[in-house]
Each structure stands twice: as C-alpha cells, then as structure tokens.
Length: 168
Length: 140
Image 1 (spheres, rainbow over the protein chains, first blue to last red):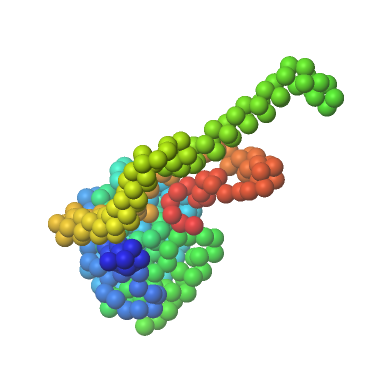
Image 2 (image 1 turned 30 degrees about the vertical axis):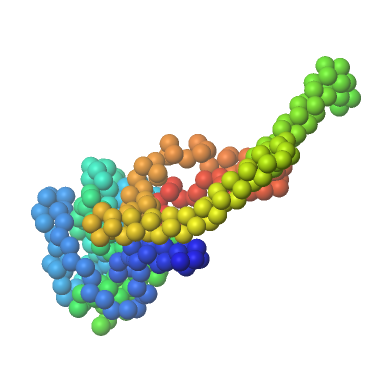
C-alpha cells in the first residue's frame, strides 16, 4: 500500500466516523425530525411528538452562549406573534448544569416551552454544528430548514421560514 | 538616541549579544547537520563504510514502516469504532461551556485588546492567533 493510498483511506475512515446527523443535510430537504423526550423546568417530560400538527421551531441554546442570550427575547416575540397560527417554539437548553439555564431564564423570561438536556445527546442526534442552532419542523414532522448560529438580522430569516411553513 | 547608543557601546552588552547570537547560530548549524554527516566526516576507512551501511538500512526500514504504521492506526481506529468506543477528538459546539468562560479569553478587555493587537500587527507585520471571537461557542 503506498503512503498516499494509506492516507486517503485513513481520511475516508475518519470522515465516515464523523459523518453528522440530520443538520448535514442541506436546507429544504424533507427529513423526519429525530424524536426526543426531555424534562421541562417542572420536571414534566415533554416530547417533540407532543407538538405534532404544529410548525415547530426547535432552538438549541445555552446560558454561556452570548448570541443565544441575544436572540432569546426576539424568539419570544416570534412565538407570541405566530403561536395562534399553529406554531410553537421549543427551546432545548444544552447546559451541562441546568441550574445555569434556570438562572438565565429568570433574567430573560420566555413564554415558549423550554426543555433541558444536560448530556448533549439531542445535540448529537441533530448533529449540531454551532450554538445556537435552530431547526424548523413542518406540520408533518419533517425538518425543512436549519439555521446555524445567530447574527443580528437572522430573526428576519426565521420569520420567513415560519411564514412559509405556517401557510402549508 | 545618541545617549542610548553610547550606553550600549559603553557597557559592551550589544557586542556581547552579537557574539552570543553568532555562537548560537553556529551551534544550530552544527545541530542541523545529520549525525551521519558528522560521523562520515570524522571517521575513516572501513568504519565509515560500516556506518554508512547501517544508516542506509535504517532509512529503508523507516520508509517501509510508515504506511504500515498508518494502516495500523486506521485499524486501531476501526476496531475502536466497531467496539462502540467512539473517537470524538473535537469538542462539540454544545460542549463549549468551559471554553466560553470569560476566564478563558486572552484579554480581559476585548476593545483595548483589539487596539493593542493592532499595534502588534503593524509592528510585526503579521496577524492572527489572537483568540477567537464570540466566546468560543462555535457560532462564527
């Protein structure tokens, strides 16, 4: 085996090992959103399936992530604006210590449901590439759009996606 | 400016520095030459040939063992992966709580740090590796 072949084989192997979850699919592809069940702040179990029939915007956030902090009030605004049209926002907190998240929610209160994942399993399931990450699930339970990160003005893009999915 | 120069000359530190750097440079030059070169130059006759033969065989062995080593590493990885022992060499974006901690940043004040870095960039005619933006949360 010549070294070049060995190297490329090694690369392929590594790529196969690291191949990510649904977020590696390009936006617009319909792929069923991986199911998960997580506790909310009252320790009641909340599933993604509970929102079936609604357009669900899943937002992965953490208290240590500055852009997440920035977009939280904006997300709350979007939730209030569109919830009457069969839309819901589900915040998935990725803090290892959920108490940090509770403290932040006290500081920036939100009205949408928030669940807490302290082991990162759901993050892996969705193949997150950035924090925050936002996934848009249509009424049939398929992932239709995914957005990585947050920069000022991204909320307009969120709104565009929500409008498109709510109309379906 | 003048007084500074005289000071250097007077104390002799500047000349000492040059001498020291020359000595270091000479030492590095010697160190860079491979051991084989030095031995060949020093040795003579059959001893030199023996040495050379030894070195050649060593080189050949090195060339052969590299792909074998890579294959072995790949095999180890594959076995580990198949055994359910996932290789996760990188910190995932949602695992960056500790990296995003303010104590992990190089500068306490990002704004004044930016100005200072600008000064360094102008002086060193190079930039980068000043720490990432965005608190290490993988969002940029």
